[in-house]
Image 1 (cartoon, one colour):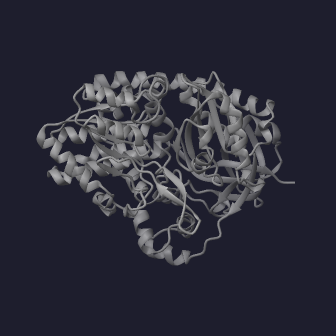
Image 2 (spheres, rainbow, N blue to C red; image 1 turned 90 degrees about the vertical axis):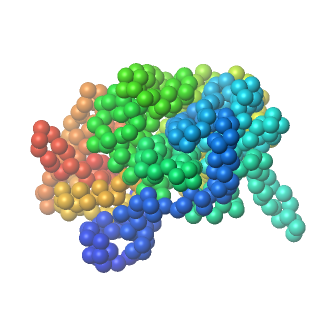
Image 3 (cartoon, one colour; image 1 turned 30 degrees about the vertical axis):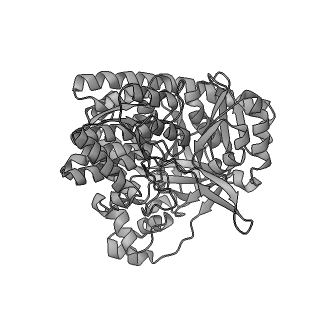
Length: 579
């Protein structure tokens, strides 16, 4: 993968900002690099509260949804939540089930099986609901593309309420002047809550399914007179879903995740406490990284290798014993998932290098034996390795199924829409998508994607954005502590990255049980030394480096604590040898 180092060039009165908000100029510069501009935005970024978020009733159809739910609760009608099998859908289902129970509803939940049912509400789920005497279906994290399914449920006499955050399907037609016009194709449900609807006035569009479920719970509690303090566990679940679904950590999402992390120190969800315990996490130390790479994968493992109902059962657990048993089972599933993922990533690399698709703009990798639930993870790893859009396709019960991960220059959902003639089903976002297709369409689909990719060579170069070219001599423990004001880090609010050139490698050694961490002692041109660690491609880098080599490093400063002693160190994200 080609990599290009870029330095942010955004301007502002960093000295003035630092003085007004009591922060270092470097911290002020980082916020500006994240698009935070003006005192009002800076104040919200540093000190934003849940109370500062927009009213849930600004979401289109929220008032209608709550009115219908209130009537159904009063009439004693049976409500069924229809979730999804990933972490976002599971957290959203948990929120809606618990909120409706608290409001006095007769409610239960159904989640599609990834293999048998596929994504979202489907005919089997609707028939099962009808047989069970369900009056109202309430979707979360799915439903916006369920036109036929919604019609079928309505024919069965059921009320259908949709809450979702995925892109709204559209059809292209000729306008009055011959131009191409996009028209939304929104299911004919009794109410549809999705901020991506063109007529939705909600100011923040990037909420995940769990966050929209939280907004629904907020509106329901407000309407039913339930104290807002009781929403606290839902904040935890919505924050976890936001990180797990890799949403932009900006605006309301950042506030939600920050508040979730605070509450997780004394979590009111027994299942979440148990999961932290079995994963060896101390609640007071849990950050966004642990949500995305430790806790989240365990919750996702249920839907990938077994059933997401096990993940939902964990969150709904009332007793510590029940929660701990469920947590251990999910951790074991995730450990198995990690081994399977590594095998399939290796197979995908072989496929790309040996089948002639290496020169394609868009990689369509056919792994017939790959468990279909792992296709998205494998696609993400391959995308990171090659900086190309990737679809990993595998055999399913009926035809083929695939999952894609994209790069910024490639709007994946839009490109799939242009190739819909080859597909039996598809959906997703600009950066990720899922699809189904007949096996005989695989090669024509690959060719069509590449004909219409719109990509150029520069799009395959990864840009590594440097916040400040800063010598490590400027770094202090106080500055590193101040960077915690910028947390939580994640998509759209990346951890700060600095760069320094002219560093000399004084010492190097591989560490860890698997020798997968490279420890360095680096010195600047004035002879000042600092320890550094590199976690990615450690063995390969160790072979390339020699003591005495000069390098430039892109790094994040951190504080290393060992046996009660603290010391500054550089965590290196990327390094290059200097000639």
